[in-house]
Amino acid sequence: MPKRMFEFVCAKGHNTERFVDTEVRVVECPHCRNDASRVISSPRIALEGLTGAFPDAAAKWARLHTEAARKHSQD
Image 1 (cartoon, helix red, strand yellow):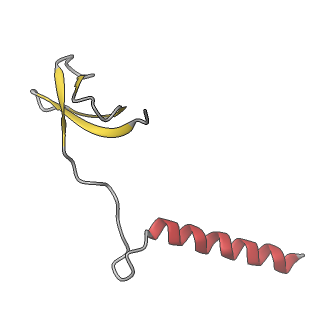
Image 2 (cartoon, rainbow, N blue to C red):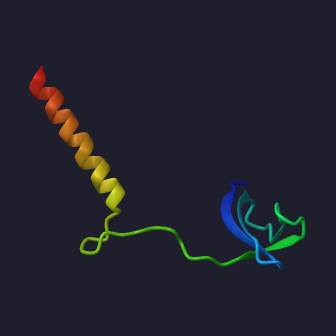
């Protein structure tokens, strides 16, 4: 079964993230060794405002395209 990244919080408020199976609901807190429950957290993505594209992916494509054009012109 594939693992996914989930966020867990213990009763003392320590946050931790782990790759676990989707049915795992509780893990041991690495800070205090208490049970930490899985919580719903917001995704950590940023979309470009006009097109909805991922800015890092667009910047990477532009950089690779420029490097390839530069390399081609040197040949």
